Length: 155
Image 1 (cartoon, one colour):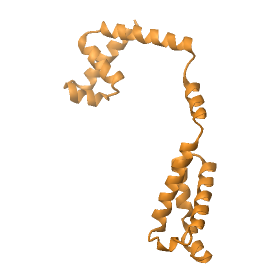
Image 2 (tube, helix red, strand yellow; image 1 turned 180 degrees about the vertical axis):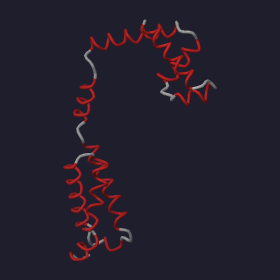
Image 3 (spheres, one colour; image 1 turned 90 degrees about the vertical axis):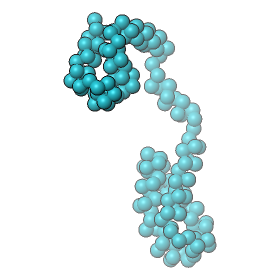
Image 4 (tube, helix red, strand yellow; image 1 turned 135 degrees about the vertical axis):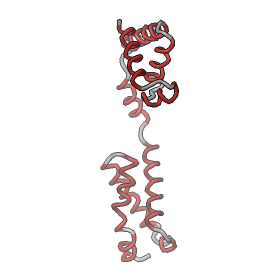
């Protein structure tokens, strides 16, 4: 493939490749670097690029694979530090566990219907409509029962 053909076929796709890279890497600088790396790779493969029928699809696939490689090469220590930054200190973790045990104990003391509805809402994350479909109760009745259950737990 000549330089002119390369410029005509592959360079207009740069925006598309950048969007793929940015979507996967979630960082503007990394995405630009990945696009540059892609074009270097394409240039080294230029003798074989004439056989490609769909340059946009082929380039997007290469871009995706390059981005996945970049993500895999990221330092695991950085990810570990980020995860640890969100964790509370050990003494606070102990307090939170005790609070959770206390709340679960209070939930056990609730009437069975309120315990079931509160569990569906809070623990399972169901909406009032979803709970209504499963239980046959009206959404308003569910809201009232959950509100009563929460008041009992707070008291």
